[in-house]
Amino acid sequence: MRRLYLIIPLVLFLGLVGFFMNALMDKKRENEEAAALGMQPSTSLVLPSALIGKPFPAFSLATVEDQSQMLTNDDLIGRPALVNIWATWCVACRVEHPVLNKLAAQGVVIHGVNYKDENPSAQKWLKEFHDPYQLNISDAEGRLGLDLGVYGAPETFLIDAEGVIRYKFIGVVDERVWERELQPRYQALVDGAQP
Amino acid sequence: MIRHIWMSLVLALMVGVSQAAVDTFEFETEDQRKRFYSLSGELRCPKCQNQNIADSDAPVATDLRRELFRLLDEGESDEEIVEFMVARYGDFVRYKPALTVQTIVLWFGPALFLLIGLVSLAVMLRRRQRAMRDTHAGHLTVDEQHRLRALLEKKNSDD
Image 1 (tube, each protein chain N blue to C red):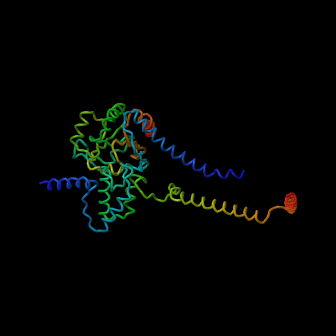
Image 2 (tube, rainbow over the protein chains, first blue to last red):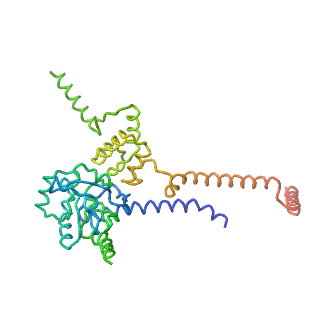
């Protein structure tokens, strides 16, 4: 009976192996799903945002359409919305764009942050591919992006009616991501905002 | 002529080498420069996740280096700068994890395992020692000793 103590280290070790295997397999499965959707498998893990539950960072930036027209974080307050970080140099944003158009047509409130981009090319893009955004924030220097902890477009934030960040999705928003990750959360906020 | 070609080849190669993460920051003091290098070595690039922001060529690392320089220039302390980065990118950007409830296992787990190992080793050694001592002290009862002697005598007389 005493001999049973001897297998404790082995059990602990196997527990650790199981824990690491699980983490590795998760990553592998994620990559396989990405590959099935025709996306690049990523070698890096998706970081949780440090800003969940915090108010949207203060900013004062011009619109994409008009350099003299300023927008601030107060303009985001009032309705739950998606805030999409995009750029014309971002290849994946092009993949995502039709989905955003479709969501906007369904009445989903989406704001755009044009991240480290040039206004003329952004304007051309919006004209060519349709503009799904209610507000078009021009963050040419990437300062707002930095305050948002953006490390690669596209990224999509979900904010509530008070302008508090509730969720962040990194990567291409496709129909599946919308249905699984974003829609339930967005709908809950919309329902909560209308008592 | 050939020498010139060689020279330009060597120079061309050197350009390639020095291209990695070169920024032209003008530091006001030597101390600022040192802190810049130590902090950029300590902060992890959120995009290319196995590099610090000093080594990385990713655009976001360039931005973070610029931001780091700006913060140093404004006279922020090292702690304030790390806090600034963590507030935006999370604890992930620290190569030196902070000591919190969540990371306590990370910090003290290995020491705990070592301690468990050493304690078990000590216990095992002591047990073995005691067992050895017991056999030498003769753990046979008086009866058993009599029987043993009888057996040995019998064996001797048989020979």
